[in-house]
Length: 174
Image 1 (tube, helix red, strand yellow):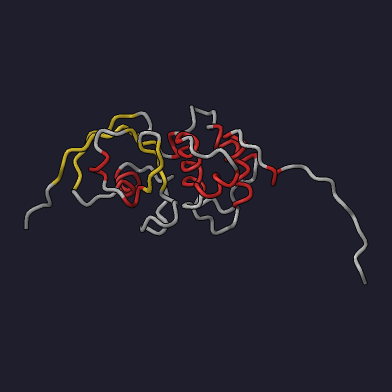
Image 2 (cartoon, helix red, strand yellow):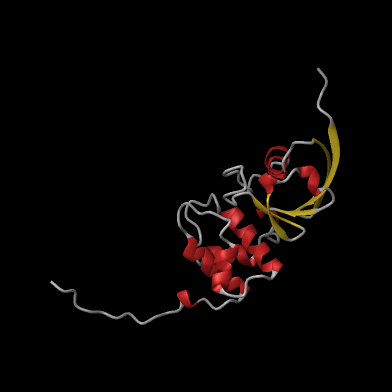
């Protein structure tokens, strides 16, 4: 039996050039996790429905489980590991911490990459647009209010749901 055919692939991942050979069926997600040991990007559904595998390709969001690595030849890939500058977190990473935008953390890398891509794409100008454009990223823990607050904070979008409101006390009927 002959070995499967391999194809040359060049990617710039998190600022570093990678020249390799891969089989035609290798997804970008599997290449990142299994061959380059970049395990921050998560495998959730493996069907493009949860967003846990979101990375940036030339600054735009993509579900890495749904694209073949060879389709991205010559492109710039940014994973969660590539967002920080040394010890300084990316503003979105810091906003997720500041706004308690995670619980278990499994979806967090995909959520953060999606949020950075959303801002890069320049499509979200309102809270409603942030909600809609982040809807491809599922959080089973339900950290959506914190995620929305973090994205809006970095994007400079006023979030009325995050406004400080006076507390009104009342008597509970017996």
